[in-house]
Structure formats: structure tokens, C-alpha cells
Image 1 (tube, one colour):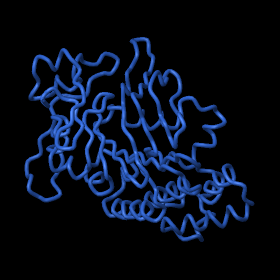
Image 2 (cartoon, one colour):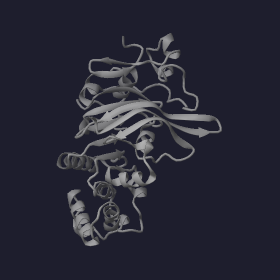
Image 3 (tube, helix red, strand yellow):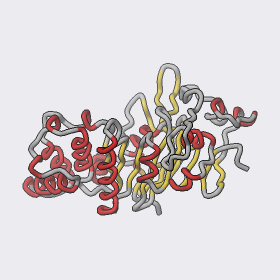
Image 4 (cartoon, one colour):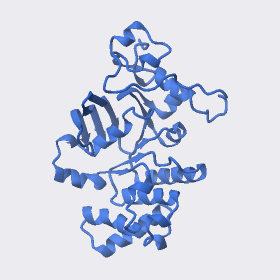
Length: 316
């Protein structure tokens, strides 16, 4: 059994114009000791999916269908009290933008101990000692434990967020754009830290990012999303060497090659559709260079090709 199974998840936002189908029939799984990458352009549903994993979807949004099974339990049917225990202890998340995610009027030490005291039966002294170890684990000296967020650099704030998220040894860690806005040297340091934590703590991770080089460096498996739909799933190595879905191919072509062979970058024409009224059939067909008549009429089923699961009419 997988650690996490997401089956036919549907998350809609109900507006005056109609239902925005932000995540529509999304399925994937995460095994123990596995890192899964979620990629796709902005507005394709990546963050909506992980918010649903923690039941952070609030009105006008609503989970309208599917299952989210974590360690054998369906998150969608859990009580509020069960979810309070799950967040931080079972599944923990590092939100995008440490500057706004950290509480500016609380010391870093207090923000780390808050979660420990909430989820575990330990004294304040024990929680403080663990907070010091957490800071050391992410490469920050324990002497900085009484500092406030404004006394930290951008990279240190992101490390502090990771310390908070891993303080209770969660079963699954979600990272939402953890290196966005940081210079390349700090990004490299943070990615090395994440990989070290992954090995040391045997920590399964879901990694959301627009940076394809980050996915290549950190992930075992990749799920490609477009317009609220999953269009391709494959191992990270296989996806980069041989993307099958036209959208995946477009993403790879629009990013510099790590091997230095691709000199000309090619963007994908157009933009993702408004999900209140998505295109019929394959949602990518208005931008696809290989679109056929059937692409605008019938939604493609998933088919397997070369170890990839691909939703595309080109696959026979």
C-alpha cells in the first residue's frame, strides 16, 4: 500500500460565473521514501491539490469528489479534531514565501516549539532542546533560537520554515516553491539540505515548483498537471529524457538544458484556459501543435507508453 493515494480528486471553486474546476479528477500516489514532483504552469492546480491534502480548501472552494487516503485513512472523511492532529504530525507543509509564513512577533524558537507542544507530550524544556537541535539540523546555529524572523536572511527564513515543518517528524512533507526568489547559491544550499533531510529522516516529499532543474535534482517521480488535470506521470529521469505528452515536451523545450545542448528555447504559444469554462475534450488541444479533431471532442483516457502514464489521443 502506498503512503498516500489520491484518487479522482475534484476541487471546485463556486463563483457567480460558475464552478472553477481547479483540480478535476486528479489521481497519483506517493510511496514511502519517495519524492514526488508536481509541475505545470501557474494556475494548473498544483497548490490546490496539496491544500486539499491538508483540508485547507475553504469557501467558495470545496472538495466535491474523490479520495485522499493517507496511511490507510481517508482525509476527506476525517473529523476536524483528527485533522488538527494530522497537520504538522502526519503531513507537514512548507508554504511558499517564508517572509509571510513566519510570525513576525514570535521568536524562531517559539515558533518551532509551538508545534512540538501541540502534538507531543513533552515539557517546555524538552521542546526547547528539540528546537535547538532542529536549527542545527537545518544549518542554523542554536544561538539564533531567540532571534525574530526579521533578523534572518531569506535563505535562513526558508531553513527556519523547514525546521518548523519537520520538528514533529511528519510522515510526509510538502514543499511549495521552497527556493523561489532566492539566489542560485542559496538555492543550491537549500536543495542540498532538503536532500540530506530526505535521506537522514527517510522523509517522503511532495515538491511543487516551476523550476524543472529542481525537479530533476530532487524527485523520483513527476506528475505533470495542466488546467486542473494530470496529463502525464513518469519517473523524473524518464520524463526528462523522453517526455511523451505534447505539454510535457513543451515544458522541457522551454527550459535550458542542463547538458548545454539546447541553445534555442521554445515557449508554448498561448496560456492556460480559464477553468470556469475549460475547453472540451483535451484541455491542452487549443495550444497543441499536434491537435486532431478528436482532441476537441473527447477527453483522452490514460494510456501507458514506455513506462509513462499519458492522457493523449496521440498514444495508441
